[in-house]
Image 1 (tube, helix red, strand yellow):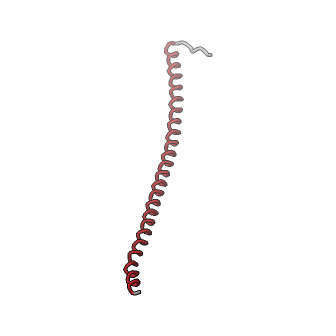
Image 2 (tube, rainbow, N blue to C red):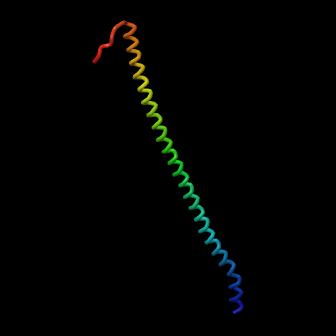
Image 3 (tube, helix red, strand yellow):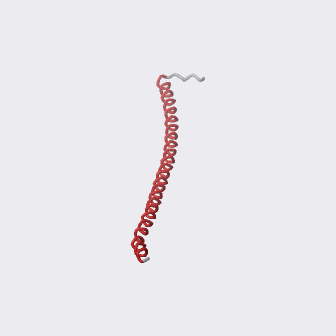
Length: 94
């Protein structure tokens, strides 16, 4: 009977160590998953910011293109008018 008690006392630390290691592995896995989730959230946030910036830039480019087109049209009209004035002719009305 005493041998059984002695074996139990010797085996107890090994059982406790096994339990701690198993729980430790679960904790490590949980922490790794949390870190991965955090990284995915960060990546998603950065992608959303990039998408918003892309839309802002696209709008700015379209506004500038429209403004440049309008200015080019006005410049062509001014050149045609100056050409007619220099030659002394009147442009025909369509």
